[in-house]
Amino acid sequence: MTSSAIPWISIVVPIKDERDNIQPLANQLLKVFENRPETDLAPFEILFVDDGSTDGSSGILDELTVHSTSVRVIRLDRNHGQTAAFDAGFRQARGRLIGTTDGDLQYDPGDFAKLLAYSDRFDLVCGKRQARHDNLVRRVSSRIANRVRNWVVHDGISDTGCSLKIFRREVVERLPPFRNMHRFFPALAKMYGFTVTEVPVQHFPRAHGVSKYGVGNRLFVGLYDLFAVRWMQKRCLNYTTKEVRPHHHSDHRK
Image 1 (cartoon, rainbow, N blue to C red):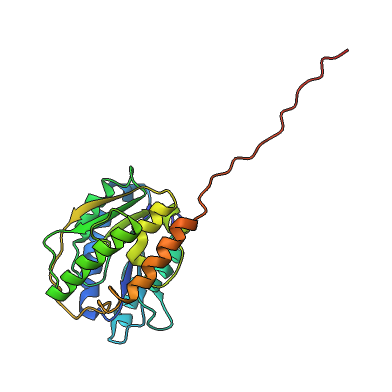
Image 2: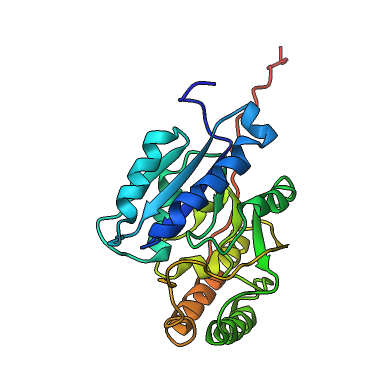
């Protein structure tokens, strides 16, 4: 394999002040994907997107690129939020498949195997957190938000906040970039006719640091986003084309 070979998968990881989690997360991700059978045929890449970190995370990320050619770091000019970090990663990713996870070690990178088992049948495979380890406010607000979102946009997903996902490249190329987009990935994918499923994954308590992407916009501000997505669903252009070529017939008239 050459360095110019197209990766079979790109993993996009937003990072905002996760200094103590970066190295163990990188070690786990590298171990998982170095041992995948697909990696015998094509490389993989891990894209850490530094979303304006100020706690020393940036230096640790830079060090990772020195020790592994599979790691890339994309740095935003300042803190723009999780959706912008995902979008920046999607635009830089080169893989045929694109996976996502958080930088907080609350997911097991080994669970990507569960999602990959469905990636040949579905365009977007979403994790669904089992025995969720978040505080009561986050759990309740998330439960309400999921129900309201489903009621409005009918995406059929019970845990859209789970960041463990695998997309086919064609899906992320169609996703419209707007704030809080990541909460509507399944609805937007279905809007364009892509297939979506949900797979149970593990969830762990946060061991280091505090959550940077909070619940403040999960309910009230999110209502604006809900109706924006509903508006797009009703007016989405989703068609296929086929070029009509002229048929040349021989003239048998005498």
